[in-house]
Image 1: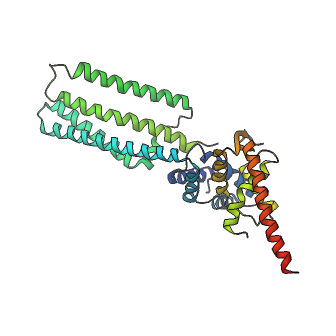
Image 2: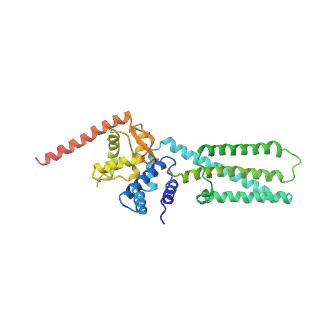
Image 3: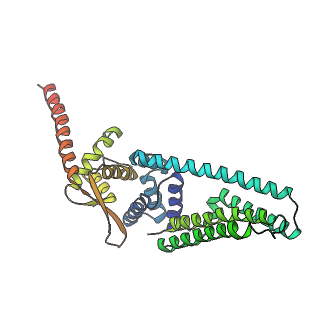
Length: 215
Length: 110
């Protein structure tokens, strides 16, 4: 059975994948698509046919995006490049630190409890990496929060959690000389997993809101 | 069917002249141009939007979000002062091209 909303959602995904920005200009294109479908249905076409024609008329995602890129200013494009570069740079630096931490963990002695806690961190971290690699699928798991204000509040809350854990680690946990062997290392490992986890959840919430927005 | 290059070159003066009659939105602009050209000026629908955005970026037109009769969100475009100037310049150039062509054609039949 043809599901118009599902088809439009898929079309939105294709547009997003090609790099068309949401909300603008994607919202405007979607409005156009819906209007075109409605008009074609009025003139007697079936819904699937109306959808197929409207999609064909509006043009392919890649050509559209190429045209939109032409009109975005040079500064905007430079910002985009810079953003990508920074993201790449930080992920590489982060990955190196995390791997060094795991290496140290594998080589050092500790009690079974801390050993298990360390392995739990590695497993959880692997889960985060896998969900990032399969972002196309994993992003669907996030709940849709339509209110931007609520999403922002979640973001601020998460930043505070991250900051608080960093302060706790730096001021109370690591200077504590009573700490069991390996405990500090495992806690640092967990801290380095907490950061991307919070970021991934925030990105997931943003993406879910973007994908499922139906006007 | 009109050639692609000509379609692209005429898009801006067409949009400006259409918006000079009052504000409008993407879908209506396409329908209007299609109707006025007897279906011969055929844009790939989506391509209108990059053109509109570029014109807005250059300060020729401005946009606002409004609502359609059915309550759906719709983006309306209208002419700005620079757009009026640009339109006048376009009309001048197109009339010049047209008059040269028309003159040459007339001479063929003399």
